[in-house]
Length: 65
Image (cartoon, rainbow, N blue to C red; front, side, top):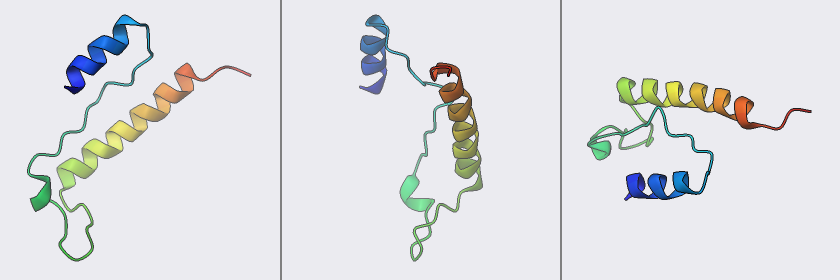
């Protein structure tokens, strides 16, 4: 469904942030039961990468003063 939404939004010239995507498979097994902290280092690394790319995206699309 997300893919089709992205296609629809692209057709009306929406600026999208699509990459890198973060998909955490078997998410229920990757969080600490007590603290609910994400303990899967691969997933944490993917999220850090996505946040770094999101910062670049925001700088690129933000209006210049």
